[in-house]
Image 1 (cartoon, rainbow, N blue to C red):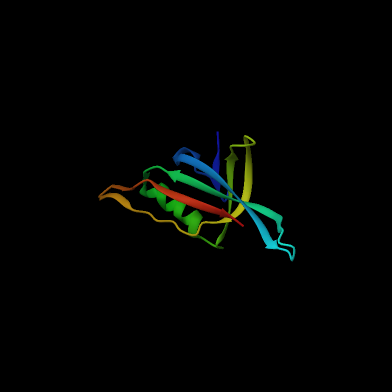
Image 2 (cartoon, rainbow, N blue to C red):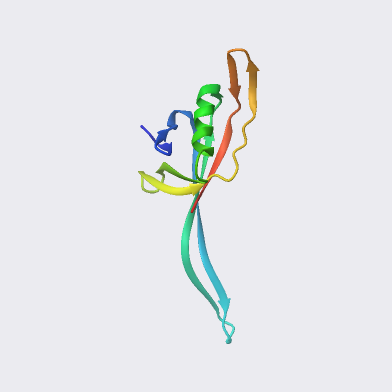
Length: 119
């Protein structure tokens, strides 16, 4: 079952965790009588994805999907609240990859996390 895609490329088999945080956006101001007025604006989600140790070929394909083209990406993930696949536009502001081993014929990257911020 596919539960995490970047630009329609399925990376579900490389995912070790999938965390969906919801941030509520609102404005607040105090009126002349001292009452705090709060207005709900919207909500935005952050999707945190744990990626397992990858071989060089898979890592290269994933990094190409993350870094290629426009800074805006489209991800599809399994929403834990609705149990349905959802697609959002997001940015991936930081992606840090560290090598686990660099040997002839066996180059692997350590497990790492991606944070996708909804636009």
